[in-house]
Length: 492
Image (cartoon, rainbow, N blue to C red; front, side, top):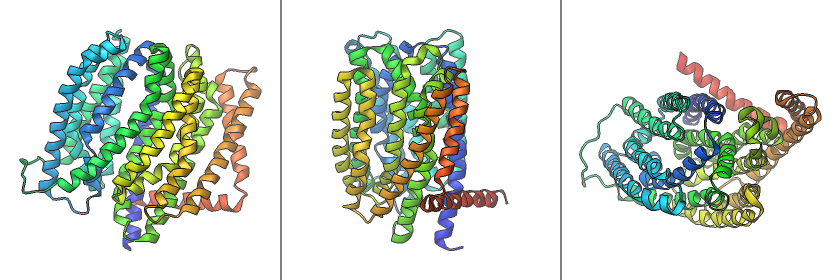
C-alpha cells in the first residue's frame, strides 16, 4: 500500500470511530436537552450560560494552543511532551485560582447571587482539563482515535446520568454544574488510562519555545473568535435577562453544541492527517476538497432541515413552553451550515503552521460578527440570532479568498463545491418546510416532522440527476468505502 493510500486509510479509520463516537455523543446531548429541559427552568440554563462564558475564556488560556502545537509538530520528543504537560497543568491551577477569586466581582456585575457558588465550583474544571491536555494531544498525535472516542462518550454518558439524577432530586442549576464537573473528571481518568505514560520532571534541556510561540498565536486567535462568539450571549443576558437567555441557550444547544461536538473530534482526525500530507500539494488539495464536501453534505443538509422543521423540532425536543426558541433555532441552523463550509480552512491554517495568518484573518471575521450581532440586538433576541447567522454568510467567502493569498489552495473547487452543498441543503429545507406547514393543522409535531423529512428526501433525490452532483455523491461514496475498509482492516 502506498503512503497516500495508507494515510487515507488512517483518516478513514479515524473517521469511523470519531463519527460513531460523535453520533453517540449527539444522541446523549439531545437526550440531555429533552430530559433536562423538562426538569429545569430557563433561568437555570441562563445562569449556567453566563458562568460558561467565563469558563470558556479561561479554557483558551489553559490549553494555550499547545494541543495543536503538539499535534502538528513534525518531531516531538518525550522531554518536550513532559514540559508541555507541566505548562498546561500549571496554567490550569493558576486559572482555577483566578476564576475562583473573580466569582465575587462577576456576581456583583451580573446581579445574580447564585453565580458566586456556580463559578467557584466550575473553577475546578481548569485543574482537571489542564492535567488532561497533553494526554489528549498524545493520543491525537498517535492517531489513537478509538481511545479518544471511548473516553468522550463514556464521560458524557456518566455525566448525563449524574445530572438527570440530581435534577430529579430537585438540585436545580446544580445538576448542570455537576454535569460539567463529572465530564471533566471522568475524561481525565480515562485519558490517563489510555495514555499509558507518566510525565517526567520539567527540564530546560528540552526546548519548547517554538511550540509555545505557535500556541500563543492560536491563543490570540481563539480568544478573538471566542470573544466574538460570546457577544450574543452577553447581549441577551445584559439587555433581556436570564429567562430569554435560557430560550436562546436551548436553541443553541439543539444545533450548535452537537455541531461543535462533531467538528471538534473530526478536527482531531484531520489535523494529523493534513499535517502529514502537506508536502504533497496534489494530495493535500484533494484532501481539502473532499473534506469540505464530506463536512458540507453530512452536516449542511441536516442543519438546514432543522431550519425548515424548526417548529416540530422545538415542540418535540423541548415542549410547548419553549415555543419562543423556534425563530432563534432557525437562524442557528443557518449559521451552522455557513460556518461548516469554511471550517476546512481552519484545518489548512493549523496543519501548515499558519497560526499568525489565522490570527490576522480572525481579526477581520470577528469585526464582521460584532457588527452583525450588535446591530441585530436592536431588534430583540431574534435580531441577535439573525445577526449571528448573517456574519458567516459574509465571512465564509472571504475566508477562502484570504487563505488563498497565503498558501496554495484549490479556490475554484471550494467555491463551486460550497455552492452545490447550499443548493442541495436549501432545496431539502424548503421542501421540508412546505410539507410540514401543509399538515401542521391536521396533526401534531410528529406528523409534521415525518412529512417534512419525506418531502426533503424526495426533493434532494431529484437533484442528483445533475452530473456534478452525481460526481459529489461518488466522492462521498469513496469516503464511506474507505471507512468500511478501514473498519474491516481493524476487525481482521
